[in-house]
Image (cartoon, rainbow, N blue to C red; front, top):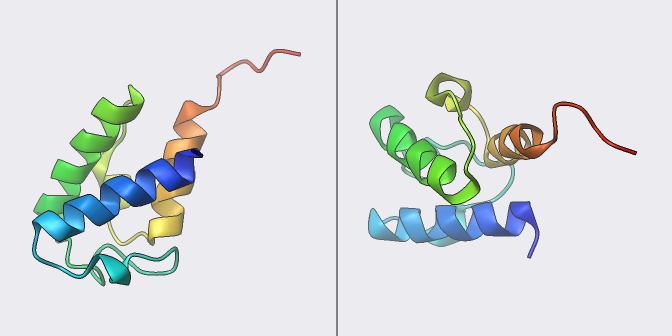
Amino acid sequence: MTTAERILGLLRAYVLELNEDPAKVCLTATLDDIGIDSLMAVEFVFKLEEEFKIKLDANEMRGSTVGQAIRLVEDRLKPAFPTG
């Protein structure tokens, strides 16, 4: 499973917990579009940090699309000094 698929799965499950339609979760939707306000976004950031063992700034997620949020997590997962 790719990082994007893991994040989409977590996001759909979270949206479902909020009694929102998980079908709204797509790469171009904003967090607001899928029923996640700023406080909920912070809570979701905590879930992402726990899942991926990374540190995120919730402010970076504000106003972002699902695709942008995925890229943010993927960027945090890249090693600071690539090997090879």
